[in-house]
Image (cartoon, rainbow, N blue to C red):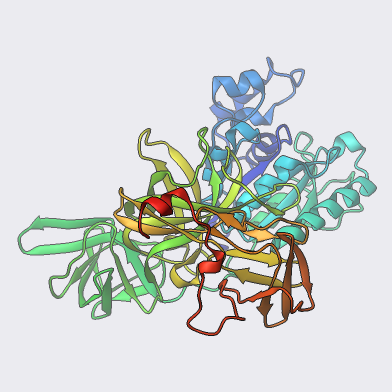
Length: 538
């Protein structure tokens, strides 16, 4: 027998819509692979006598352990199972499919390397299937297996499988999913779960378990450099000061030169401890204690790094899955946790929300539960962070309500600091132009800062009215905006597309400056006199 670690540990998640058979599928894998103790198998047989399978084994009972889950026949909580075959070790997360428990599914997705998304052969790709696929992609999962389940109820029809596969391919293209495989299965009957089905001879691919045992998840290039967020400062006595945490990228050895962020101080690694054992080097995934050769300003939330290209920023844009019953409203403050750092922050603006079905970016003034949104956040002080695509360990975050202490959202940093654009976008499907119009600046006493607030929505298409009227300021209703690829035309306050220049109308640049006025430019012709301005000098 080969070692179970032959292909490395695989952490995967099972997800999909309600009653697609996620728990049954995973339970069947455990049962068929002889991964149950004798008392577990006997208990499963007895419990199945009172279920909805007329005495036949109900494999979902191996995963659905809560009383409410068994009563309703649905998964509510995330069930983790640790098992191994002769070829690989696994950690599986069986997640709920009901929309009400989407937050639980997101928690399971945050740890996984691969997603098994179940699709009911009779219903095809549903809204919740799309939502789960988007969340998995948002959490950085790059490997997907779409298990087209309940083929037994469709008479194992190849035509049905091909039709569902077409919908899966369309969804994969829309989301830009990588490494996608579709496998026809019957979770209740065991077809193509652990053994190839004799009733689907037209299928020539691997079984689900066979694919999981051999899936190569090492395709992604490793993160740049070395970094370790500091979890704890260890001071057993006055002679020793060590910094403890888990290495998120790279490796470190005694004598390496590290930079402490955000202070920027530099020191050499004096010694490395793995638990209580002194070692010469350590690598990604290991929890270690690092002792430096001199005193540096490092505490919980700081990062020790070398050649990682990390940033110290105060503001950033993030894509969030909103998980709170209370709506997200710009201007509200939260706790933001990035790696081991916890800081007060304010959501200063919503750029757009994502339509789950179409993927379109739409305008939004507030965000409700289970919606995906991109917004701007500002921290109370600069913190070490990075874009999620570059460094997962410093690019993921959660938002915590400062009153209830409930987790309000989870998400990823899409751009930080100077890379975070401001203003609105004019987009005709072929060209996109970023234009800074009516950025507002408000003072936030909670973090003692003046913050920029960009107008919403962030993206305007031909036919959309632009925000040309704000307090104390008004743009003309007709003007053109110069760009490298032509002119964006605004007529009667509506973006009409990119076209020819009309000399009779004002010409602006993307910053909102009037190009027809020589420097120094006078903006008073765009100013509206308000009661406030008459009473107070501006």
